[in-house]
Image 1 (cartoon, helix red, strand yellow):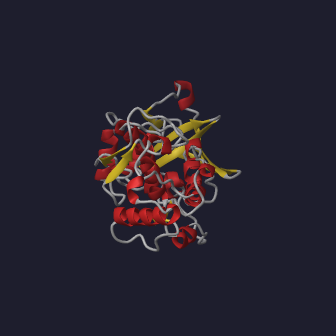
Image 2 (cartoon, rainbow, N blue to C red):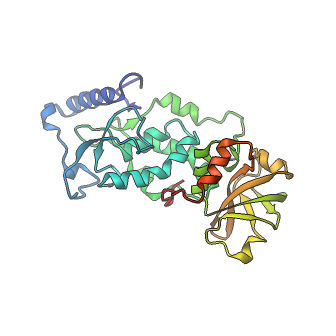
Image 3 (tube, one colour):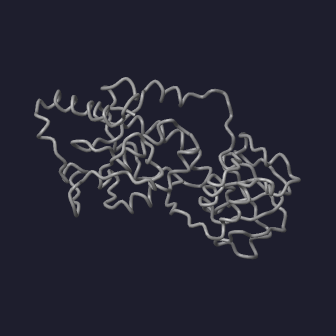
Length: 313
C-alpha cells in the first residue's frame, strides 16, 4: 500500500511510508508548512458536519478486516461516514469473507483505506483505478452470492490524481490479467475450516443437509435439483411447502469447477439465499463427520451470531 506517484515499494513500515509520502506531496504542491495541515471536519465528503472532531484511535483487535493492515491507528470518523467504532466494526465485518476469497490483492488495502483510514494531516481517499480494479475482480464473486457492488463504493467518486491511496500499479495490473485458469466456483471452494464454513453460512438465508438428485446447465448457470428429503439447519424465510421442491442455481457457474456437484452420491451441507425470483446456491460442503472443523461448524450453527450483510458479501 502506498501513495500513487510518491513511492515505489510497500516494504517497511506502512505508516511511516504513507506519512512521508503525504508530507512531501503536501509541501511540494502547496508550499506550506507542515503545521498548517490539521484535521478539520469540513475536509470530509464535501463538508459533512460531524458530532465530534476527527481523532486518531487504535485499531481494535476485533476489527478483523483491518487489524493486520500494516498500521496501528486509524482516523475516526471513517471516510465512509462511520462516526463510532461500533459502526465501523459492524459494517467492516461484512467484508472479511470477500478478502478471504483473494479476488484481488488490493481488496484489503482499498477497503481499509475507507473503513480504517490511516492517520494523516488530511483525509486521503483510495485511487479510482484501484477501486475499479478491485470492483472488476471481485464483483463476479459477490454476484455469485447475490450481492451487487454497493453504491457507497461507486468508483467515480474517488480521485484520479497522485494524492490517493494505491498499490503498485504493475502488481495490480498483472493481478487482473486472465491466466487461462478457471477458478473454483466461489460457493464450492470447500475449505474445511470452521471460519470459512461460517462465512458461507452468514452469507446465506437457509441451510440444510441433503443429497443432490441432478445437475443441469441452464444458460450461464447450473441448476441444482435436490432430493426431497432435507434436514433443515437454518430455515430463514423458507416455507414448508417450498422446501421439498426447492431448486437452487449456481450463479454464473456453468463453466467453473465445483467438485461437489460431480459426485451425487454424497450428502452435503447446502446453503442458499433468495435473490429476485431465484434461489442461489451460496455454499456447499461435504457432510464429513471425520472433519473436526466441519463438526465444530455444525455445532456453532445454533448459537452463532452473524454480522449484518447489507448489500455486501
